[in-house]
Amino acid sequence: MTVSTAKAPARNAYLAGMRDGWPYIFMVVPFSILFGVVAIDAGLSLAQTIGFTVLVIAGAAQFAALQLMVENAAVPLVLLAALAVNLRMAMYSASLVPYLGAAPLWQRALVAYLNFDQTYMASVTRYEDRPEMSVQQRFLYFMGVATPIAPVWYAMTLVGAYAGAAIPDAWALDFVLPITFLAMVAPMLKSLAHVAAAVVSIAVALSLHWLPSGAGLLVAAFCAMSTGAVVETLMERRQ
Amino acid sequence: MSYSDATIWGIIGCLAIGTFLIRFSFLGLIGDRPMPPIVLRLLRFTPVAVLPGMVAPLVLWPAATGGEPDPVRLIAAFAALAAGFWTRNVVWGIVGGATALYAGLGLTALL
Image (cartoon, rainbow over all chains, first blue to last red; front, side, top):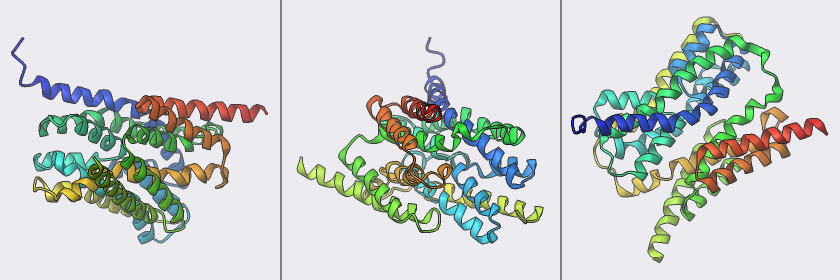
């Protein structure tokens, strides 16, 4: 079988992406149901709820915006808070440049639309593990990760919007997000530099928690990235 | 909520465009021009720099308990981190954290 050798690696990259993407459904399902429930509860129409989820496709920012809308905050404040929560994605965008920068513009635009925490984490981990991947394989892998996640995100928001208040608080759906993020971070703590970065991130984020939502996190992330880079440089010099 | 329908759609539209531009920013504009090594080194720490800081307040001061620290949630968070660290696997981390959370909530309900 030598017929499909040219296509096989590309297809394999896509399938590998799907395989690595499906576990994140555990995170996406409760989170998207919750958004549907909360949005309808807050007074959005069904169309607005679905429009929000499909067009913005950023869980944490959607919740932040909704929270401020419930409080009838001024519109610029709603926009600012939600976009600040999303600013971490500018860092994601930058960190994908070395891997996907050479892809065609339409592919980069598609990746940008689908660049959220789960697709980004899964893809960057894979790219780091396999430096030999071609740009095309990387793009297909990214699309593979997004394939099970994005449709489930849309559909479950709809389910949440219909299910409404039927979900009891006792399910503690609020804590699904922290657990999943921690489970994502833990395997990445593979060197002293990574651990140091994580510790600084926590310390600064907690001490700046009084800042408007999202602002403290940006400072924390920058301090943590600098810490990681410095510690890594020092470790290399010692060897 | 006291916004008009048009205002709500306006908010959604602005957030959609703004979020896309944030995500497209570097990837779209820089493309395949080389980036300085120091920038690359900083960027490799992006995930471990962002996620812990995002999660820490949610773990310490969960909204569901009115911002009061909750032993069950603290233990569940630790379990997720420990399971993910030892197995090096996201799914086992989630399973570990969820098991601890629901076991803890169940026990609290019984006591």
